[in-house]
Length: 168
Image (tube, rainbow, N blue to C red; front, top):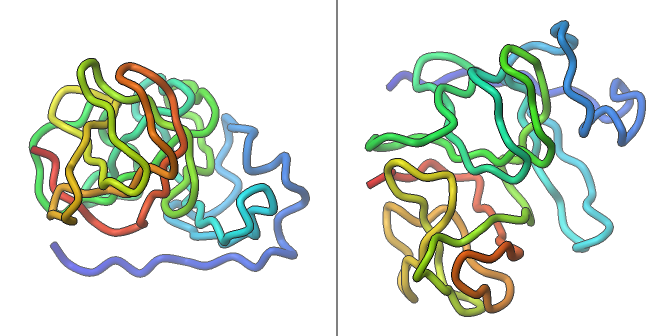
């Protein structure tokens, strides 16, 4: 896959924090624009990427970018190598534009029978928008780590790396 040039927008061009959680029918920023903001709740930086939804997307779903475009290519991941996981913090209507988290703390739901402990790596698997335990060693499938113990089929805090991963 060829490297993509990703536009960066200055914080001053974002009117307010509400813009990050309000999808729009019209495109407002260039697709693929990356914005870094201070997440005061978690005392860390958080990276967002501006994308167009391909299908209706639920809040707190982990998705992936299409390899050749700056659009969300599926609500449900399929087996693919070297793709960027992103998370929707709000529900997004099909063909709407929104900011998706690419790096930082997010809320994700674990799959049934998956219960990662604090500090363990997490991954997502083919056919689901939930996460699974990836163990104590980072793999090509790891998308982040659990910030606290997360019970099976429960939502919890995950730090998303912002790196490409493999869906398997």
